[in-house]
Length: 125
Image 1: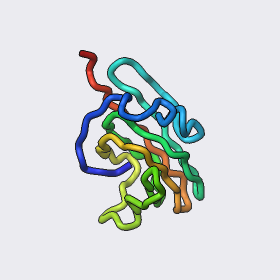
Image 2: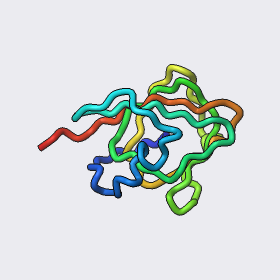
Image 3: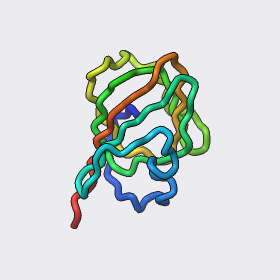
């Protein structure tokens, strides 16, 4: 979820079957969706892991609950261990996340990882 790289995408880069709502519905719920944004409530309990999924749009993340996690790419290679971050985001922190290709997340902490993601869809041509 945390990454400073900026990118742009359309949902078409990956199959719809990998969209977070389709591939990992136990951990993502839609709070709002229209042609400009999709707001997701993401929850990953202690010891849980998501299925492999994507986030096709960059997003603003609002932290409601933090727990240490490891993000893996779609092939199972570790790409981020939150325990190595310089600081731990507090509740109420806003973060930027670029597009995320196929990945899964494992909560390795003792708390629920809960983030509201405001995904910024590309404007229609």
